Image (cartoon, rainbow, N blue to C red):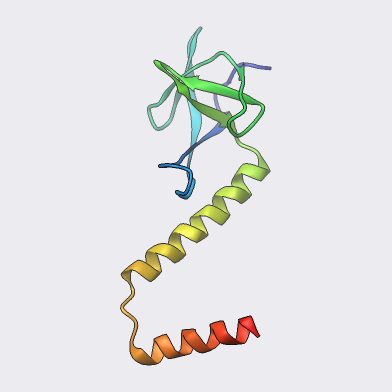
Length: 116
């Protein structure tokens, strides 16, 4: 397990409860000290890799918030973030859209087609 270096890409995932969608935040290590890695978004991480069971095998805890971990970016994380962002976009669209009766009928018919 290596320490973070300048230019390393990292991410964090937050949820508000088990049923909430995952919200991914990505950043880059901008500066390192003997004990810290400072991200471009201002977050300071303890530059001490630890075994993590949250998202990846290795995590870096936030300085003074040891329960929050950031992880090195992986292709799996990028893909999962894309899927979650698409879900969030769809949910927001449905919440903000006022459907006409014709649109409701069209959606209803599409669902009936899919269920048959």
